[in-house]
Amino acid sequence: MKNKNIAIVGATGAVGREFVGCIESRGIPVKSLKLLASARSAGQKQKFRGEELTIEELTENSLEGVDIALFSAGSGISKQYAPIAVKAGAVVVDNSSAFRTDPSIPLVVPEINADTIKSHKGIIANPNCAAITTVVPLWPVHQVNPVKRLIVSTYQAASGGGAALMEELELSTRAYLDGKTYEPKVVKYPYAFNLFSHNTAIDMATGYNDEETKLMREAKKIFADDSMAVSATCIRVPVLRAHSVSMTFVCEKPIEPSEVRALLEKAPGVKLVDDWQNNYFPMPVDASGQGDVLAGRIRKDLSDPSGKSISMFVAADQLLKGAALNAVQIAELL
Ligand code: A2P
Image (cartoon, rainbow, N blue to C red; front, side, top):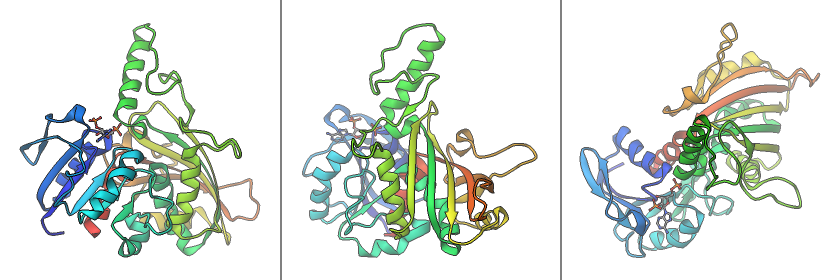
């Protein structure tokens, strides 16, 4: 990657800040870095490589001269401004759900389908965070023994709801401990010492919420396998920034936990945390701040006598591999 003009749309957000961090920590050569957000944040300063950059308001002219634009300001902003960025000559890596299901737009996890980047026409979609966390450790298995059916339950952190939801978790927890009442502002549920079904709309026809639908659709698109049956239950838990996923999958042929362990030991982007003696397995506090998806609790699903089913538990930093890091890896491949 040679000295590109990079723009971050949503630079003040939970993911936007991690974009800056990933560009810094991965030593990406940058000719210029433009930090864009709403008018509310214009004029604020943010540090990049020892320099103070000024946040600018996103306008129709902001994306002139930009080579790569990393978007994380919600799907409304992406739908409005990504086409403008592409028209101005930029390639957009979009972290919102705006373009993910469009068959003409690649949905990329570099460890899985980096080759699909070549087909982009200006926009590349970064998958949903729970989908990335699920598919990275599942892909090595799928390649040697195709997954026919996948059932996942997620334990999703506040970071998936942005900086405002992270703040709500902190403030409501503090209020709870101080014996004070806290009126929820971002979600309608009490968040401290509680969990709730993911705060996205329910499809009245199926009973699945949007997050679950995204995970189910995106897993198939990323694997380019529409025949894989997927069912998800997505839950928001009072964890600040790493998502966990419990999954049970049924493969085409019988499979041993030892085979899965051997595959994941050498899988890119995966770290095995599977210490049965010490009951030590993937945890969000360990996943926070690192790029790998932690995988463990790999065991035979004893409810399936065919021997084709495995259960495992994984955790990944939602803001890094689940969002900013994956997008920056895509930018590197560009
Ligand atoms: P701002 O901080 O100025 O509101 P998060 O995902 O953490 O909620 O962050 C959302 C990001 O999207 C923030 O950087 C936010 O900027 C940005 N954003 C929200 N609305 C707009 C808008 N109308 N134009 C540009 N950026 C926006």
